[in-house]
Amino acid sequence: MKQSLFSGIQPTATIPHLGNYLGALKQWVDLQQEFHPYYCIVDLHALTVPQNPQVLKDAVYATYAIALAVGVDPKLSTLFVQSQNPFHSELTWILNCFTSVGELSRMIQFKEKSARQTEIVSAGLFDYPVLMAADILLYDSVLVPVGEDQTQHVEITRDIANRFNNKYGETFVLPQVRIVKEGARLMSLLNPAKKMSKSDENPNACLFLLDEPEVIHKKIRSAVTDSETAIVADPKRAGLYNLMSIYKALSGEEFEAIEARYNGRGYKEFKTELAEIIVKYLEPIQAKYKTFIADKGELERLMQEGATQAKEVAAKKVAQVKTKLGLIL
Image (cartoon, rainbow, N blue to C red):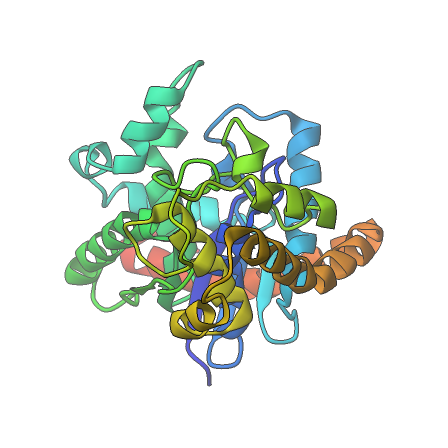
């Protein structure tokens, strides 16, 4: 049997960008052959900040459709919506009782997100690392593909699991982090000192998976570079290096080959051809997305199918935990 892994993506009103794809979604597809993945649209995590109900619902459909469009195969992976599996919430409460307030207060993302809250800072925002731990531990996940900013959450997951295992015997698998090395951290097109982000105030700073070809060309043309002329992969030239990283990730070519191709050529040719590479790469993803999002009935059928598969596995783990705690099944 294949070993399990877990990964989740939050549904938002904004479609995932190229950095989300290269840093997470592309891994989702690649890992299907070696592992049995449990991939989750984490809509309960989305509730840690205020949500418009209809916007959230639409975002769940869109994010599920994007996952299918990039190549997640329901025959190889269990793709489901978090709120359709109540065992995530049940295990979270149990794991809360094995997590200290001090551990949660040290979480970097809580400090950053709570500082940006304009309304209440909810207990859910404080506690969501425990929900993430439940997400992972329910499926005996040996691997968790995440972005660099999420490694602390996998570390606390391991701490919680260890604490439970030490007291009640071997119950939870201790997961390992997997971070993709190339293209995992794409930077803003307009400020390469900042990570590419869906929440950037200027949409031209970010390449979204559903951007039209003319939009992609415009964004790449306006991307920040520098006053030098040679096309070389120098990390100190942050703007150009970011663009070359995109080129490398999508074309499969090494930096040396890219440098050789543009030896003696300028930014205009490089940017034009980079934009065309992006357009051609995203074209099949966009076509598949349009097909999936147009058939809500089929999306709902696949969601139910995925939730049923996930609940069967999660129910066994929760029953094991409750038995060890002396809770009545």
